[in-house]
Length: 142
Image 1 (cartoon, rainbow, N blue to C red):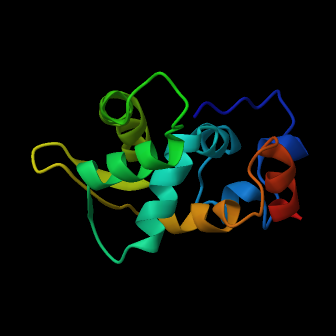
Image 2 (tube, rainbow, N blue to C red):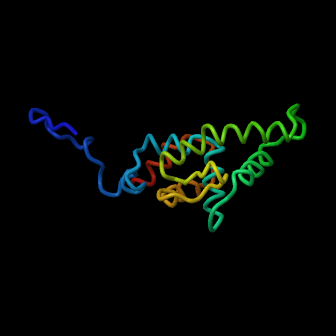
Image 3 (cartoon, helix red, strand yellow):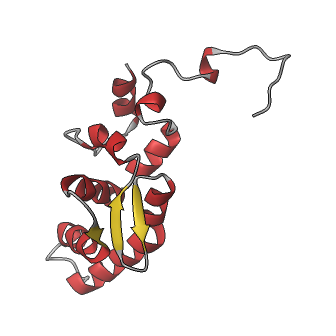
């Protein structure tokens, strides 16, 4: 961090006590928005919070694909599971691991709760995650 003596500190430079950043265990608001900004990532977090320990990637894939499957769609359930598996393994699980929401063991195919996972629980408990995440973050910071 660079200190600029010619620049005055403003209220925007440091988070307010009880703000979302402090509430989220020092995760920036943009990181929280990014983590919770995808249905599959939210479902992974919900599944981990519902379990006592680790989950296999195949269990996560099955839960998410079954929830997303539409019997009238052209895509078969097998194809959907393959797509979900690829997106979880290449995109969503590594991103969640980067934010320490989970630990992803690629060799064993296991996902375990991470250090910041409990910080996401209150935001996932909201009745509807259809709209923007910003109003929920604002309510939490008040």
